[in-house]
Image 1: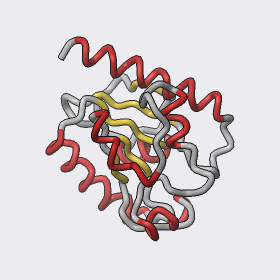
Image 2: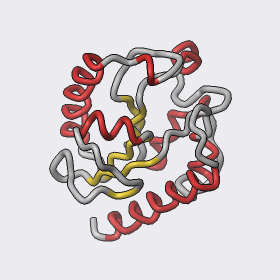
Image 3: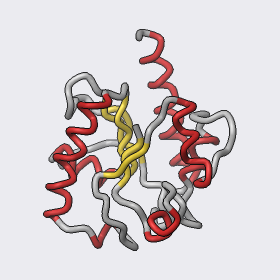
Length: 159
C-alpha cells in the first residue's frame, strides 16, 4: 500500500492519485520494476492489478504538505491505522519521510525497510516523496523504490 501525504490540488480536481504534472510517481514505479509498464494517473485503478493500493494520511487537498496541520495529522494517523488493520497489506510504503514520521512518531528514520513495525504484521518501508517539490534526483528515488521491489519479492516468496 502506497501512503502519501494528501492529494495535491490537481489530483483532487480530477479524482486521480499522483496526477500533478511534475509528480514522478508513475515513472518511478516503472523504472524501479514495481510495474512492468508505465501507468499514469488516468490508470491509477490499475495498481490493483499488481496488488497495490494507494491512500493518504490526510484527505484534504492542498498545494503542499506544508499546508497540513498537526490536528489533521493526528486525525489522519488514527484513520490510517484502522485502514491498515482492515486491509493488512504486506508492506506499507510511506511516500515521503514526513508521512512516516507523522504516522509512527519516530524522529530518526532512514530510507527503506524500518526495523520496527507500526502496525503488527505489516512491514514499514519509507521512500521519498515523488512530488515535483522533492529535490532528490530521480535516479536516487528509483534506487530506493527498487529496494521496495526486492523486499516485495522476498516477502511474497515466503507467503
